[in-house]
Image (cartoon, rainbow, N blue to C red; front, side):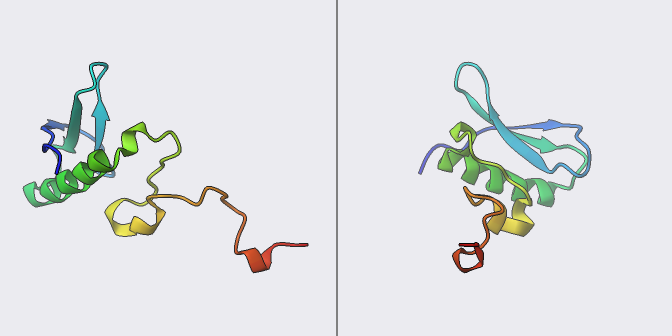
Length: 90
């Protein structure tokens, strides 16, 4: 398992739980919302560690839509709007 990354607290809108980023030197950090509870920040920190382990920050196609409540949308369909194969015209 990779090394756990440090966290920094910032005042963020309450709709943002946190995020991970890397600086120009390749150092990775987790930013947590200082307006949220310690318990919420612990959950967010664990969630963001998974993104770091998965290399999501380095995947230009990665978009997270729903956060922890909607894990199915963490890795979007590469063909959005295509629908199921049996629903395609042709």
